[in-house]
Each structure stands twice: as structure tokens, then as C-alpha cells.
Image (cartoon, rainbow, N blue to C red; front, top):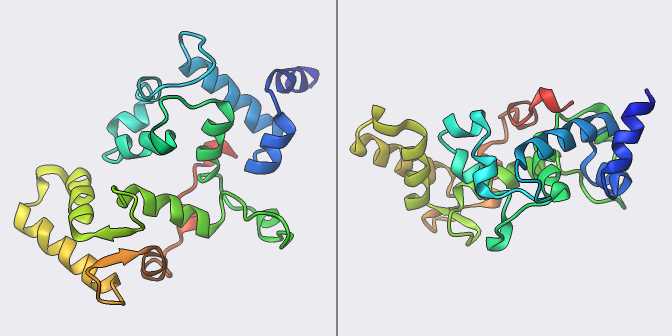
Length: 195
């Protein structure tokens, strides 16, 4: 029992990170251990190459986009707090997460923040809209050669057309959230291993 708290003492600003991400101290210790294992050269940060070691990301068609999300604004490295901030989007929603103090920031694993994270995987040029071209690019990544180009174009056209309420030919974040209203994002974007 004492070893858990002694490991937590090694994590700088552990209490602040715990409050911001909602991860338990035990989860942060496990994630810190994983972070250090990925940081093979003991640099104190991770690069894109370090994250490419994660097998589940290597086989995920959106793996490169997910890895890119760890490096906002063109940064070349992610420290431990940045690493767990991204992972917090995948933390399962629990009862205590829904009883939020309105004065506190919305939890990173809230429905809205999970949707915003997913939206950014599609919004490749970061202009706040998902264009037909961006939808097509993501669809290509997801289905590969299993579907013809014409079929992919039809799917992209139909998807954008159905979600595009204002007729501008693209999907805004608000339109994206409305189109996913009935989807159980809280469960689909959760990794139980991080509980």
C-alpha cells in the first residue's frame, strides 16, 4: 500500500494532474509507469516515434491522427501531464463525473469533450469544420481498399449532406454533435483499462 503513494510522489504535480484529468492516483501511477516504458531513452518526454510503439495505435486506421493529437500546435514532444490529458478523454464516465460543480471546468471525459476530441480527428486543417474532402480522407484511412473510390465519395457526400444543417457544404462542431446525438459516445470512447 505504501508503495503506491511512494510511486505517486515521483510524479510531479500529481494532485493537480489528478484534479484536471479525473484519474485516480492508482491509475496515474500505472500511466506514469507506461509513460516511462515508452520513453526508452529516458528523455522525460515522448515523441511521435515513442507513441508509434503502442501496438493498438499501429494497427488502428486512425492511429496517426490519434498520435498527432498528443502534439498540439506542432509541438514535437509530449510530457507526462500532456500525455494523461489526452488519455483522459478516454476515461469512462462515472457517476461522480456527472455531479460537477458548475464553477469547475468540464471534465476532459465529458460527452462534449469526447466529441470535440473526435471532431478534431476529422477536422484535418483545424478550421472548425469538416469538409467533404476531410471526410473522404478519414474514410479512406478507415476502410482502405475494401470500398471503391466512387463508393467512398458517395458515403462522404451523404454523410456531410445529412449533418450539414446550414448548407455550407461542411460540418461544424455543433452539427457534428447533433448528428451523433443518439450515439453512446461516453461508452464508445472509453478505455476500461484506464479505470
